[in-house]
Image 1 (cartoon, rainbow, N blue to C red):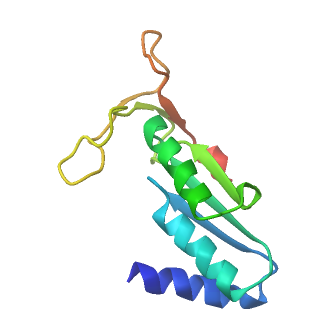
Image 2 (tube, rainbow, N blue to C red):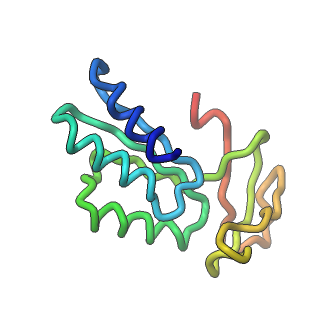
Image 3 (cartoon, one colour):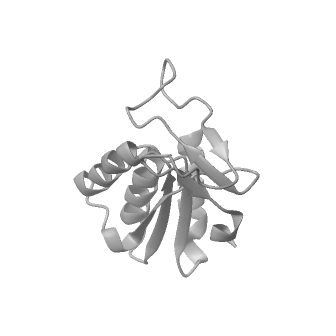
Amino acid sequence: FDWIDVLTAVADSKDDARFVAIELGAAHGPWTVRAALAHRRMYSKPAHLVAVEASPKVLADLRDHLAVNSVEPHNVTVWRAAGSERRGWAAFDTQGCSLKGGGHALPQTWSQVPEEQHPPPSRWSDSQFS
């Protein structure tokens, strides 16, 4: 059903001045790339995509995936961030996926950055989206 959602969103954007899509927990950006490619095939108008990913290691894979698929950097905003119902900081496994089958275990979280934390944790804030 995800494919139907992406293609419907792109098709329904025909009367909009600009197509915008956001992928939270983007990982390597599969839906960001799919939306970009579908939009490119259907329209010549500009599109802007936002990919949000907290893992520093995965961000490199995301940027590579965008480049391999010729998604222009000026059409994509990549944020190293995590989403939550509250503000704070989170440390993610930087060695890759920590759950069998992919994904991350729930990160350790704090309301303020602990001084001893290295590498720096990801910060999330609902103000980034307002």
